[in-house]
Image 1 (cartoon, rainbow over the protein chains, first blue to last red):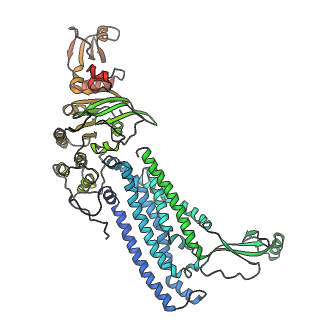
Image 2 (image 1 turned 120 degrees about the vertical axis):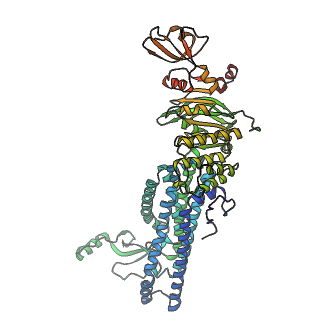
Image 3 (image 1 turned 60 degrees about the horizontal axis):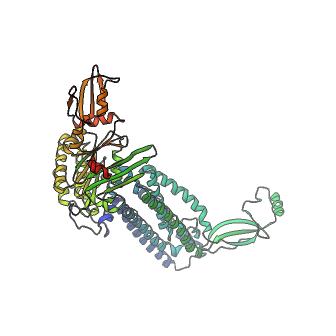
Length: 329
Length: 310
């Protein structure tokens, strides 16, 4: 399948395959998962490549810029909408799978089966063992996520303004393109490894990792809007709003007073229009405000978010290393 | 081994390990000469596995130090010189036997593939079989092959024979003795099967409740004791004379007779009948009498005065 998957020798024939020493042991131990990961990555990339051809054909065939062309947009969405949706779904689950099925059992399985006693009493030091045990699977997981994400980004970028109304922030594109999938995979894998090391049982560690993944994704959803400086457009309360750039991500809507004080969008909205009017007059609400992020902000926000995740992962992994050095597992 | 400056395979000084529940091993000091086959005996929970853990760097001692062949156990260099067979014989269930041996080869610079394969083949364990499909005895054999193949100077075995049938037990014991003799390997194996240890081992460590009760060569420890029987006298049946001149390890009174296991401090009175006890009798006497004084033979004693006393 790839150059790294040397078929396991049926008899002990030395010198087969490119891997030697500890990396071979780690590869062999996680062979099933790592092979599946490489296979799924290749399949994913092939599928994305095929989609890219379809998308480019569509764009060239129509020959028109997509902005403002409602007919073209509708046609695009009916043809590619569900595909992109499932692509993004797939890419958003990759980090979860990495954390639960690779991270959590990585050390916990060795502890649960006692094989830690076997592998740490051979002639290699515990820190070298830990480096290989963490390094190889994390490298494969991050590499695969990064590759998938890069290929999908390449498919998605030409049509970023047409897909899901151009809302790249909440529509799923933010988590499934650029550096974010790889950073999330690294972060959740690190969490899984640490939880597995502390819990020492595979299944509870997997459950705990899934829970942490859920909790952090909720935090992430609240937090991602702060990764960039939000831009806003103010217009009169009863006026027609200006059109946002077609590829901007609408973030929030407000009502505001003349001096810029913001109230929630639902302020002074009820069934009684007279009362609403009086309420607005009392508070001084005269404007509406749209907050949004421009598409040009997306990459910066993604890299900032990825940097935060990588920093957190580094802290968690440092804890794992510190603990294994301080005392045997 | 000849280039080895230290004649001691193990030197423990004040070694102790405290867990949350209390001390699993306390103030353990002894040394084991290289080339010996040593039995580490004691009841369950005596601290045998904890001691083996400290020697294999799986357990960090709370107090004291441990040196293997003169090198502190904290130095990673000792890892290549020791092999450890854990009690539950952990192996990767999805590996084949051949892959398990390859693991040994990849992780150990002194690996002896021919020896490891011979150990596996002599038990008719197919190299292509997955570990998970093997029987308990076959798995133990593969674990043995991994330990032997490492070509250790010190082989640490935790209850190695516990799950083997008598035939495999006999065969692997023979293999163990032959390998140890051929390569001059020091072997330390824990067990609670005293009778079995007696024929294999020439050195003994007795642990009880985390304390070292007895240490030394078997040919010095066992003959240092006498099993004495005679007519009961005195308050508790044991004659005062016996107590004063000899060290009483354990005594028992049945009717007008007493019997006692003693360490003679001089010639015995003719009014008593004296027998040479078996190793098992000596060990059991010590285990039953936590208050009896410990016996660390001079050779096993760590301090310089011990050497003189020997």
